[in-house]
Amino acid sequence: MRLLLVEDHEEIWDFLSRRLKRRGFEVTVATDGQAGVDLARADLPEIVLLDMNLPVLDGWSAARLLKADPTTAGIPIIALTAHAMSGDRDKALAAGCDDYHPKPVDFSRLLAQIEALAPNVQATSA
Image 1 (tube, rainbow, N blue to C red):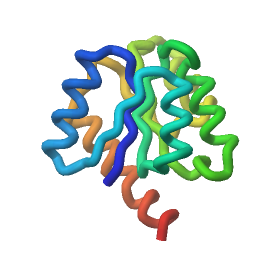
Image 2 (cartoon, rainbow, N blue to C red; image 1 turned 90 degrees about the horizontal axis):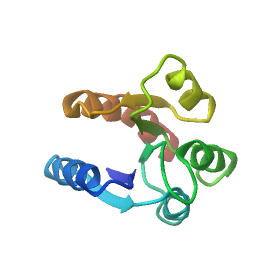
Image 3 (cartoon, helix red, strand yellow; image 1 turned 90 degrees about the vertical axis):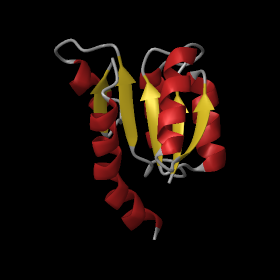
């Protein structure tokens, strides 16, 4: 399964991409929101892991753009964010994210979220 990780903090994208690759995922990394939107449109990954606090274009705007584009609208998005206050989950979902994962990342929980979205991905790409 191909994942797009949109994350601007090198320690986080390095840690996550290495662990996900060890689990057999193909991982592409974008370090700002606009690059994430561009890569999603070009590569059509099965799932996007999207930090919400990004340079150039924030994650909320990136999620809205991806969901508004018929080419990328069906790609599930998991919001990765340090914004763990009440209402932040709803804000991410309202922007078009399909799920929400607060930082620091709980890797086993994130894997479960990816796997939960995987059947939907297979159904829409078949």
